[in-house]
Image (cartoon, rainbow, N blue to C red; front, side, top):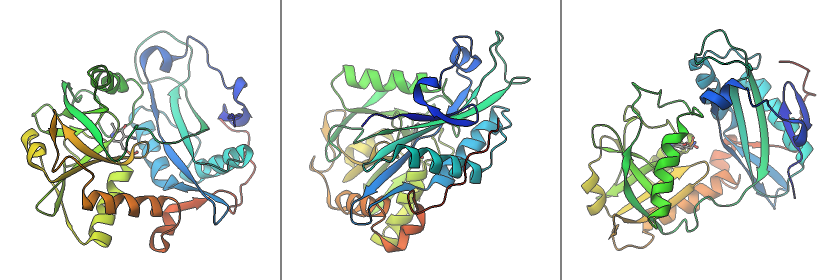
Length: 316
Ligand code: PMP
C-alpha cells in the first residue's frame, strides 16, 4: 500500500500536494526539527496503536521552541492531526509517522529569528530499520557526536543529522550495520539514530542525558521496563569505550531501531557474540508493550481507529 496523505499547511492533503519551494529556509539551512513515531498493527484487536505520541509531540514542540518556531498547535492538536492522518490512510500494518517543524519562509539569510514556521506530518508503512535486530555489528565511529554547545543535542534538528549521516555511512561503507559515536570527552554517546545500553554484572548502564545524546523516548521506556519488569538496576553514567569490549550484553534502542542486540563491537564479540538472555527478555517485553499486548503499559498506546478524531480545522 502506498501512502496517500500528508498534513500540510493546515490541512490533510494528497501527498503529491505537500510540496515546498527550493527557496524554503529549512531546505537551505537545515532549520527544521523532526520526530519519528511508530504505529503497530495488533491483529487480535484489529487496531493500530501509536506508541507514546504525546511524548513525541512534547519533544517536537520543545525543538520548535529552541528554533524560535511558535506553532498554533498544542500536543492535543497534534494528536488529533495524527488521528485524522492515520484514519485517512487506514493502515492495517505497522507504520512510521514523521512529524516535522520547519522554517517555511522562502528567503535567503541564515538565522532563526523573524521567520515563519510550519508543521507537517506524513506516514508510511514500515518494517525493521536494521537488518538483524538480534545480531547488530558495530564499530566506534571516527566521527564525534556534535556537542550541545554547538548544536542542541536534545532536539532533533534536521541540519544536525548531517552528523548522523556521516556516522552511519562510514559504518555501512566499512561493512558494519551501525556505529557507536563518542562524545567530545571520549565517552560512549549513542548510535547514529539510537540510544545505547550495556549490561555488566546484571546492571544495565546507559550514558546520562548530558552526554550530548538525544533524550530518547524508547530509552525512557526501556529504563522503566528494566526496573519494573526485569527487576534490574539501571545506572546512568559515563561509559568508557573499552567497557563495551568487556560487557556481557549491549543493545540499541529507539523508535526506528526498536530494541536491537549489539553482538559485535570493533570486531570483538560482545559477551559470547550471541543474543543474550537479558536483551532477549527485553525485546520480547518491548514488542508486547508497543503492540498494545501488555496490560500494564497499554496507556502508552494510542488506538487509532477506536479514538474519535475531530476534523482538522484550517489553521496555520
Ligand atoms: N538518538 C538519536 C540521535 C536519534 O535520532 C533517535 C531517534 N529518534 C534516538 C536516539 C532514539 O530516540 P527515540 O527513542 O525517542 O526514538
